[in-house]
Image 1 (cartoon, rainbow, N blue to C red):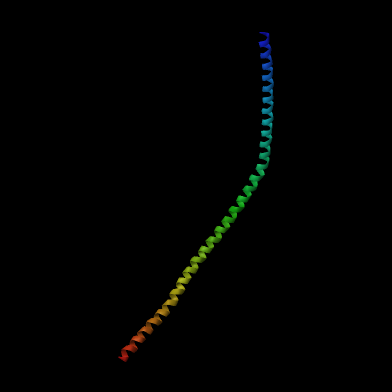
Image 2 (cartoon, helix red, strand yellow):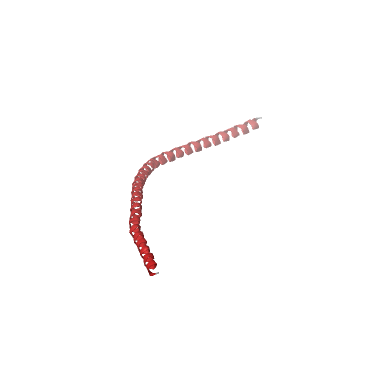
Length: 113
């Protein structure tokens, strides 16, 4: 019985030492994780602020680009309308001249016969 008591006592001491070692490892791991999180927070905050500033700058440029595109669309519409009017103005005299020329040719042909 004494041998069994001695073995159980030694086993309990070994288990206690292993348990203490595991607890120490867990404490060390938690401290390292806490330090890592603090460092990450310290580095991440300025990065997020810089990203926010960058995104604001990109949005401003996109708004400016949108304004430019809108102006180009307006100018394109105006040029298209002007081109259409100019084409009609050019066609009208040319069509009239062709019509007069056609009538003259028909008149001369009719007189020849």
